[in-house]
Image (cartoon, rainbow, N blue to C red; front, side):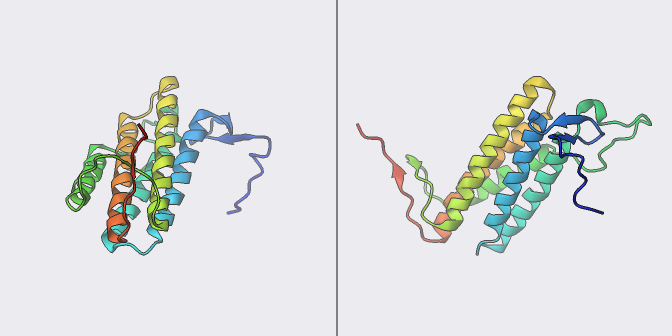
Length: 189
């Protein structure tokens, strides 16, 4: 299989199911941002971190591929004429969200309660995590905007919201693991 097809040279690409759209289409922005997020999570995973966290990040990366596939498939193309589902993969569902919530709760057991916002940084791994969180928030905003035009699974929207929470708590846990002092943001009065 060749990696280049030349079919996108004029600024268009195909969604799953064959529909041609401009590369700046909101659906393309949505799953392109998911791809960017997945790459940054890979960067977090490549750091020297606990193997349990690595295992969780790999699961999240798999989930993000599912979300990207779901976003790349317009509602009117989800089912083939035969009645069979076009995507032969599991969708993101409530149990995936519960998984993230459980991971957040488990990490929070080790963290001091927050009294202020925290300045991102202190360690490269923590910073990569905060960048991932910001990209996740952008993906959530784009998916929410797309949902205003055409229906997006509610589980995608909830998952992205919860994933950004997970990434924030993970950044705090990685600060603790790396003995980084969290710097609170205290506004001047």
